[in-house]
Figure (spheres, rainbow, N blue to C red):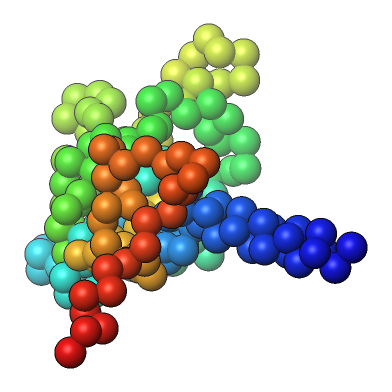
Length: 195
């Protein structure tokens, strides 16, 4: 009876350890979510909207272009010299082509800091004006929201030179390695323990 209990404990520990190796991103840092509002101060100085620590690269997971419906999201859009009014909650029920993940990723991926101008990301809506296009509830008419009244909701991750908490070597994640029932985990070399 004791043998079965000990065997069950050992097998459950083995399975839980192997589960971490199936998806190594489990131990990575969580993704960061950032609201990016258009800022002339950042764009004129060439500063960056997104930044990672040194030796880390930005990896954009998603970027959505949305209208600003609250002063709390982008307070800089509602101060002098340009005073905007917040949009109504029903101002843009159906944004058109608001997924800008690939465009933001083209500017930001594999860089430590990301600097861009809003009009490089969004599309031109009418007569040289940039902004967000929205369909009304009925789906018949298109309205244009100016660029100054929009923001980006960006989810990104800072990837370091190595994965965090990576066990041992890269052999475990090599495509040539195929675990089997008798040899399911590779062990580190004992050569470094020999003096």
